[in-house]
Amino acid sequence: MDLKLDGKRALIAGGSMGIGKAVAGLLAEEGAHVAIVGRDAARARAVAEDIAARHRVTAIASPCDTGQDASVSAMGRDVADRLGGIDIVVNCAAEPAGQARPPSTSELDHAYLDRHMNVKVMGYLRVAQAAMPHMVRQGWGRIISVSGTGMYRPGDTAGAIRNAGVVAMSKNLAHDLAGTGVTTSVVHPGMTRTEKVDAMLQARAEAAGHGFEDELDLLAKATLNGVLPDAMDMARIIAFLASPLSSAINGEVITATGGRPGVITY
Image (cartoon, rainbow, N blue to C red; front, side, top):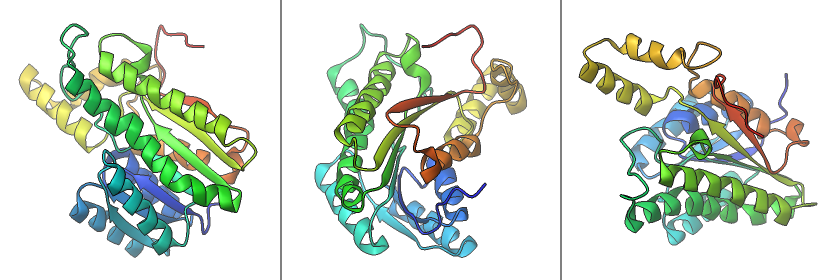
């Protein structure tokens, strides 16, 4: 299927690792020019250079701390100038869930919650706001935010609040942008194989005294598909949402977990 992304200009916040890196590569494969945005300038530059070498597109690195207003504003100008505009935003610059035991509600301190909200909710909003004027002027755009299924279950108060906040932000943006040709969407991955998740699973396996594949198999068996999704599985979903073919989806949430047993959500 032709996703009609040839020549589109995509800003991927969190594009140097994990889901963001997979998205950047797939969008470039579909003909989009990409900006790799992340705090680690060297890593972002390496990913951009690799994509440019493998695909006949422009790929740039634009270092940025999405937790800082000034950094995001400067990055937005840099990307728009160097790519000639911005058509697509993919927000996935946030600390993944499950890397450590989250504090309980009674243990939760304001600094911890503030950090999570500032990077994931406010950071996503900052990036969207930096790109929206370009999209509105040209009458077309896509804003896709990667959140997570933590909002559906108790046990991680900060994670649930930040993920619900991403959904509320995206839906409100959809209303604000109605009629402009710019749409928004949210993808909720479940546990997804990325570099960080594989490192976490390796540490768990060593602590439990068994192999990495045993730890992976435990998680895979917890899905209806029997396979743990990986970053490219999420990238395929996001690439469709970034395309003109996704025009019927606006302000909506796509949950992608490999199938959660025993759960019905509405």
